[in-house]
Amino acid sequence: MADQVLIVDDDRRLSAMLAEYLTGNGFRVQAAETAGAGIVEIARLSPDAVILDVMLPDMDGFEALKRIRASSDVPVLMLTARGDETDRIVGLEIGADDYLPKPFNPRELLARLKAILRRRNAGTNGSPRILRFGRLEIDPASRSARVDGRDRPMTSYQFDLLVALAENAGRTLSREQL
Image 1 (cartoon, rainbow, N blue to C red):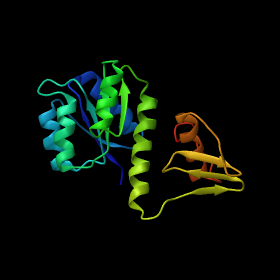
Image 2 (image 1 turned 180 degrees about the vertical axis):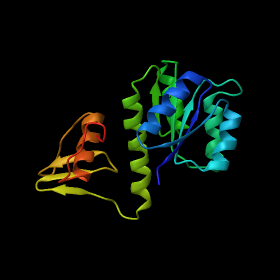
Image 3 (image 1 turned 90 degrees about the vertical axis):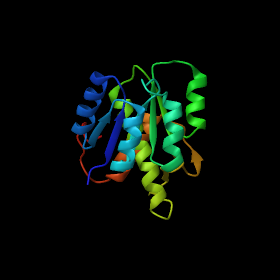
Image 4 (image 1 turned 180 degrees about the horizontal axis):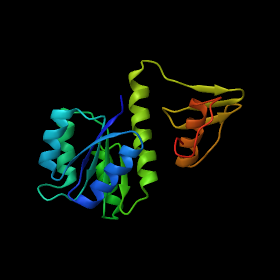
């Protein structure tokens, strides 16, 4: 079954655009326009992930995140129009799994969302999953890749692409599937 994502953002246009994009990429999507409604929906739906805006009409996203964390460990990706580094740090410190400043590329949001879900799913399997191909070793949990035991630095996008190819070894994938 497809992962379910809850979008909590008062910007209807952005929520609709994200819902359409995520649905087109295999997710089930629900939306809430206020933090209070989002918290209720999290309890009702038990989504696989939440996309939470920092600036909401009834309470800020930081307070909403604290309330979410009081009862749920659902992965949360926070969005903000504020460019302040301190906001990003505070969000991560109080329990956000990732943070993305607006404006953003929907593909980047999708990649970050998939990464959050991979980390969550890797933790539920019981044992860490290491992908090995000859001299190459990929550890999705720590987001590291090694050749002959030596770390190979790469961007987040490169790493996500490497994991997608490794998990689908021997299969032909379209650009959309990647």
